[in-house]
Image (tube, rainbow, N blue to C red; front, top):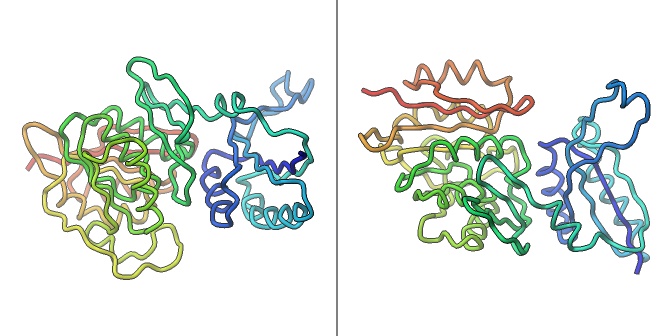
Length: 325
């Protein structure tokens, strides 16, 4: 049987957008992600005059039947905004006789983050090594594939600061990847998102990874976050449940837009508790360096000290500690 192969090269941050767009249109079942391989550009590349721009390649396979051309055109139109904004290449379409083998797909889907985390698809066979922490995800409409820089940076800081028995809030849980990571590091988590699709994705991730005893999943937001609508600019959200900020968390991680962090600065401060056992820590991600100065101002005024930072390209994640009273 022959297949129509649709392939697109992307930046780190575009991977979740591509998968979300495909999933919303029921094209997620045969999507494969691999690291981008720079083509041989000859002498120019040898002299260092050509620098790689893309980081991942995404391939989708459709049966080469009477509907293939129509579906291919639909997908090209669907993804064209990403090309116009420089987040992806032009969609390439080819007819192939075979799809990649299971072995080829397995090696391309192993994503190692930090010192311990290994992100895999939900059903991929894998023999873990000592000290590795396995995070399994299935494709979903929610953000957080483990490929976006904001997710990677968040995981690196969580690996550094989570200690067993912490009480943690994962605000904007998305795919659930951060909640699962926190639980596997030994802490207890409230996974909170104001999007019902993200809530379902988090519940799925918690179940697949067997951390139900440590993670509570809830649709809602922290204090004034419930008044800010859909954080990702999607459909409006009504009747969002509110979690009161009342000194109940040892650490808060939030991978959400920068403007939302600024709006929630005072609520983060009220939601963190100070004790002799755990420091009151806040890990912020989901924004680029454009927000760095505004975040510094907002969180200094709210009583936080910057203690750590992780960067990847224009993306960054910040770790703040609440000043002792």
